[in-house]
Image (cartoon, rainbow, N blue to C red; front, side):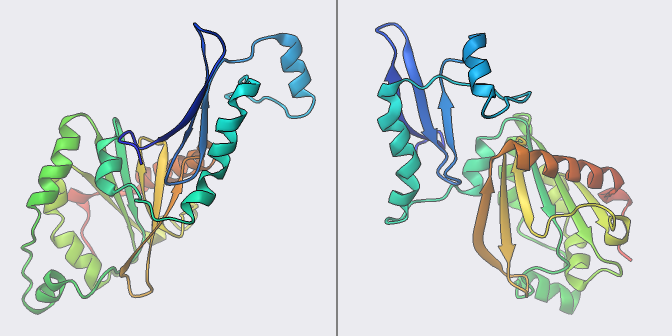
Length: 252
C-alpha cells in the first residue's frame, strides 16, 4: 500500500500539456477512484442521461481509450490481492490521515472479560489503567484539530464490564475525547448498526466484529461509498443528540 493510503494504478495522456484521467484503488475496500476531465458538453450529457440519470452530487468523467489498460488493472487488482498477502491499514494510519473528525461507536455490553485490569477491578475495585500511550496518541490528533467523539450504547442495569469501563474512562477524557453514554431504552427507535465502528472524516468507516464473548476478532469491513456513509452519519448524530455526557452519566 502506498504511503498515502491509496494505490496509484495509472494515468492517461490527452496531450503533451494535459494529463488524462488518473486511477487509484483504495486497498482496504477495493473501491476505484477516477480523477479526470468533467464532461460539460450538453449533447454528450444528454446522451449519457438517456441510460443512467446523472443525479445531484454526481458528475460524468471522460475516459479516453488509452486509459483502458489502467482501468482494467484497477478492476482486477483485488483478484491479484486474493493470491497474495497485503497489509490492511492500521488504526494509527487511519487516524493520522484524518483531518477533522474520528468517531467511535460501541454498542456491546461486554468486551474481552479476560482483561487482567478488568479481572483485578472485579476483586478489589482498582481503577488504575495504562492510559499513557493512548493519551499521547489521541492527544496529538486532538491538537491538530481532529474532533474525537466516542458513543457507548449500553443496557441498564449496566453489566460489570460497562461499570468498569465507566470507572476508567478518565483516560478517554484526559486524551481529549468527547464521551457520551446512551442507555439502550432511549435509543429503541433509532437505526443502530449491528457492529461497532470507527468513522474517519465522514469518508471511511471501519466496522469491526467481536466474538459472542466480546473478544476482538481482528476482522474488519471498510466502507467508503458516500451513499452508505451518509446514513451512518445521520444515525450517529441522532444517537449523539440523545446521549448523556460522561460527566453527567451515572451507571444504574
